[in-house]
Image (cartoon, rainbow, N blue to C red; front, side, top):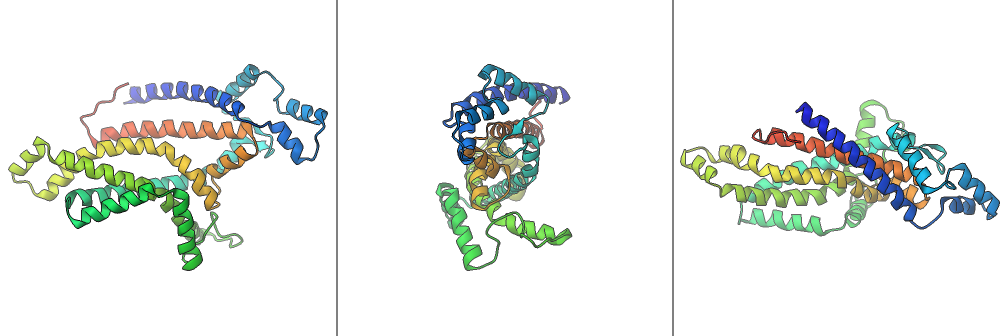
Length: 323
């Protein structure tokens, strides 16, 4: 296992470097000049001033030289300096990363737990009204845009019923501490986490249902029934455990895309995470900050994929570690 992890880490570093190079050139292809944007906001259109800005932030150097400097910095865990925020990129990301991890991991847990649970119920009562109701709800949540769910949740649970706060990470000016602070953050977390989780929960529900119905038709399940095992034991030990493999695969793929969903959700709910920071950096043409966020998000995807491979071994011990 240690050899497998070491090889995956080496491969991950190579992939990450390739992503850094690709993102570097893709960002440069985007329209807009950061120096011109800053000069316009400062109310100065003088070419000398623009040239000074480009020289100050290294934008006047040839692209290969800019790329070499940036890759060298990334390898040294230096993501550069944000010329718009006037702060190190790593500092800005570390300030926002905990909020995003809290949001995405909570949404991931909600979607996976309830998705598998509803999928098991739908497969267990296949062809009944329970199966039909779960399938219809899953299709509705899958087809509904995230921003629409977010806006309806704000109107219903915040504006109309006044049950939950509509925006932010915590109550401004409340200065809660201890358990009161935890409850305050949890109240702000419910709607954005549920908004992201509902979409992925619908996917896991459909996948779990289909996988369980397929496994239930296998010969080893029929043999277990012929031996007289209780249905609950068959469903839990034989059907569900084998049906979880495609769900784990899908969850590993989704773990990286959760950041993409967080961009929209964090913007709607004013959640102070790196998704919202990415949106702000895009509007401001902050190249270094955008690239830093891409690097961190890519590294998170690679880490989640490695964790997925390790979870495979826990779900099915017959799977061997292979490079």
